Image (tube, rainbow, N blue to C red):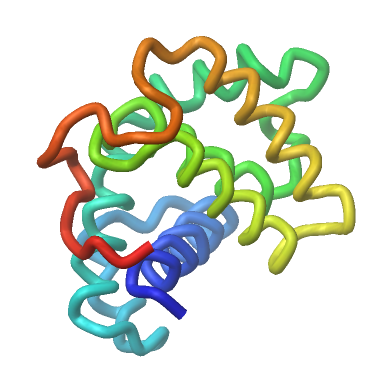
Length: 153
């Protein structure tokens, strides 16, 4: 498994735990890392993602609500909700990650951890968001975005 995939999966697992367990913060990541056993590079990438998602949670959830109009955010599966939050954060705030990479990673993770329908659902929501972006789909918009640590995809 690549460093970024490992970091994304860990970030989603932390967000899931936070979502269901009542609000763990970035300061709780060290305990999570000790439990999860991440490499230093994956920890750095995960930390950047979690910090960014928590810093931009309002904007991320607004985008999520706008593109899941027939669903109440709280009624989405916690797994799907947090996979979408991570991918939306990457698409909106991590210019060094092409949107199609964020979408493909989210779909693969949804298939691994979600339900049989999760991959299609995540793809549909993220495709709608991708259509609203004013940046290239397949190339980084710039270098040095929020989660620009390891380059292994």
